[in-house]
Length: 432
Image 1 (tube, rainbow, N blue to C red):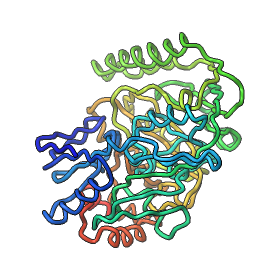
Image 2: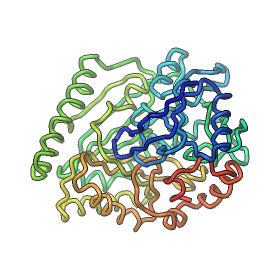
Image 3: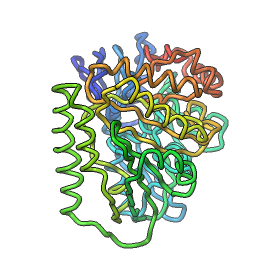
């Protein structure tokens, strides 16, 4: 097991930093158990970090920080049940390729796959589609090391499973996950630009009829982009040149360049968004492997908040945000993203008990972010929306206890799995 005493943690977005007392890279589950027991003996806390892709301070700690990067392999695959057991530290992008080699795939994935599997399910990461739950919905079993150093195995349907699967690392360190996969599939992407007003008027009908629907809207533009992703049996209908130009040159280089122009002067931002919209707002039709289509290129660094709104309120909320941005003259410089997720029973899930529309509020840079976030959250609170706990939010525990029906039950159960509070940090203490 590798340890480091002068490690400095910084998350991907560079908005969270901490200086752990000791950084651990365990080789196996025995090492993980030893770390927890040592923390108890020394009166220290333990937090696990994956890719550091959470915008919240969920992983930050001044005590023990644990990375599961060495626990990154497939432990077992059952070709009859299509269930695959993986170690908790495996990155999703690596897992997709390994599943591809076995002729398998995850049922649904998010926009990016930089995260570890344990981190992704623990923070409620999701894709899109009203027939699909968050990523944790694909988990059929898991193993974790609890707050006294014991290895606990839970299966879907067990009394504590819906707390442990989405737990922010508060019930233990997830060392192994068993996923219900499916046969390898291709995805057809169809993207169509529509007027913003037409998008909101037809949003619910369209979202309920599409398999994997998504909306992108660049504020200060008249059009939104409707993305529809459908599982198909067809072969690949895509080209390397198209992927290189669209995903590489356009998405990365041009987008970053125009964002830089917007940083020079806030007055440029509406014009910049209109130029970006002109480039991106074009019809798209292609077919490729699931993860090559459902994933998008890594975006420029930005700040990100995301709230799950009641599904039927989505058109109204989007119109409210459109009015807010225009009347308050907010100089937004990033896409606003809309996705949809099926109701679930995970205690800390933003979709607990209700089909939801996730609205992502994104912004590149620091200037004005806090004031813009406050305005977004004021609207979110009017609709009792629930924050994605892996992203930025400022609402307090009193609000969360009001809108998240499972949080009280989770907190009680958390204390039985972690009686010494070894998995706490400032972030979790504020939540509970």
